[in-house]
Length: 158
Length: 158
Length: 158
Image (cartoon, rainbow over all chains, first blue to last red; front, side, top):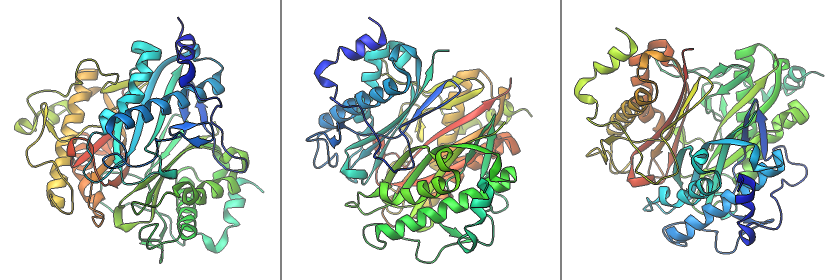
């Protein structure tokens, strides 16, 4: 199967609507420079809303397994943005970078486990080409009370 | 009006001194790689000092509207750094990326509203060329008790 | 002395083992795009473990001087990754970017002092070529309870 076919095999895990930015705002979800595609930070949305159960802080409101699932859904949203940008994931050469922020209590230190939910999804879709450099950072709060917010950049086939 | 003229039309909103790094430190405020200009993180300074009222945490010490104003002033400082680097904003092709950190209580979740203060200023100066990818992240504390700290990168006309 | 010789002159400050990623994970410690080398976020490790005394929060468990030392050790680890990637530091043209997160109490605001531990080490090894853009950000918690986590990118000689 190609990258795009593997992604589509996720079936009902894929939200019904691709991410979008409300009208009137001065930012966008992706931007290409040369053969590098940079994406805005995004979260575990299901269409326009945060997916049920994926708001709140790791270490109190969510278990690390729930955080992993939130990071996986975020990765699926990010790949939907890539598909909007370039049409098909088959035009991806490799994933460059993942920067993940985890909404955490002061004592929660399993950010890498949580962000593995994103990294492993990228590995599932792209195999070795999905391997990326990474930072997995804790924070005391995130927009919309998201449990995770993740940015990626990737290299396009020329 | 050109980008540079629009920026200068901000008049008394522009601090009297451009940002600088104290002598003896091993970092700089900007660095160019190919046609991409990368800037260090910066805050709502007025010359050498944090602007009065722009220190502290969103959610307790500052309202989100004050945070928006702090992000706007930060954007003005960042564009002053760009002018130091390349002489005139007319040599900017487009804004690539905005990464904004918002000094926040654990319960504050309006980081996007706050960082819009930067994004909207970039839209005012550059129009559609000011649209960028973005991450707006909360944090429990920032250097010098800044309310916001923002990094940008931008693409230069060749 | 060359960059690599200056680095090796750090002697017993250099951990006995280079950083590595456990098997089965979907991220890597470095990735090259064109002549830019990007590194994953890393911390003050001594081989496979966090160096004794370099876990915990600035502002309560560690002094800012201890944080500075942790950032210095992190920089040494990062340069070990660069040596793994390209063989010798003599192939570095200049340091591009340092992004440092400091595990901080809500009241700690000396993140720049802490991250100077990394910046100054880069200045020691590379001189003016070590000067970089930088963001020094506070956070309420980090993976493995690290005191600091730092990412760098750098430009390679062609």
